[in-house]
Image 1 (spheres, rainbow, N blue to C red):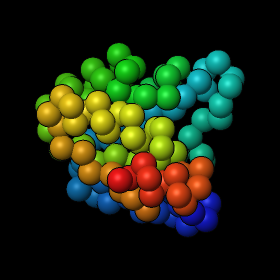
Image 2: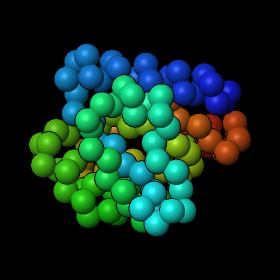
Image 3: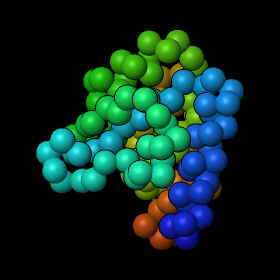
Length: 123
């Protein structure tokens, strides 16, 4: 997916979630260790004071802090976006599904390493 379009889509999704008061759980990977960059400025501007959970694993569901925050919300429906469909979306989505959550990926607000990888991960 075109990077500019992906950014527009994730920002639109985030604005929609905020407009409807849907809780947002934001996570990053290895920002604290210096291995990766923080959330892009365009998205941070929309997120405002939303705290970011920095994890060390690709699968957010395996991160204790992330998992705890999601479970404390007490909701069974999860709308997910991610950086990479085939890793950052697929792994936590499958884990959440196995624990009885309903997962709704926003397919145009997540990118894959290729179109084929994106489509295969969604299947």
